Length: 209
Image 1 (tube, rainbow, N blue to C red):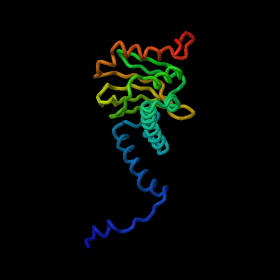
Image 2: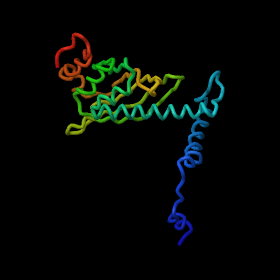
Image 3: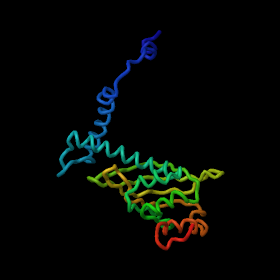
Image 4: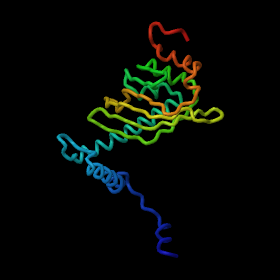
């Protein structure tokens, strides 16, 4: 039996979560932060290098914002109204440029996720996050698939987002979607008629369902 084989089959010693964090995760994360800092990506106040606590907070913020994006996608695709509005501040605003819908506030956001006329699934990639205190800007690609059948590409484009830190964590303040490619149905009169009601949801003159 080779040395390599003996190492592979040797029973692993169970490590505590604290040990795993201190030996593996923290070292790896700090390497990432150090690399970013060396490129002037991470700076504290007055351009000084971040303290260790500031580095850790930065990493925690980055991870929470990434999880916010994932939670948003799963909530929208699953038509989970409560989980979806939980991703937003109360006056949150979402818009698809050059076409409808445009929604602001919990009532309109609930209507959007509940009645959106495409049974879609989101593929989010190339996430860029720039944190500035209690605010952050995000850019990422979105590939939106209509599950059909048949499954086909509905839209492809770029999200331009603003998120803010709240007492209950990071939340979306604004999401603006720039379509780079969009199929005909999403700009058709039938689609526009279906989504126009989102913009009046919760208003006094909203039409009856």
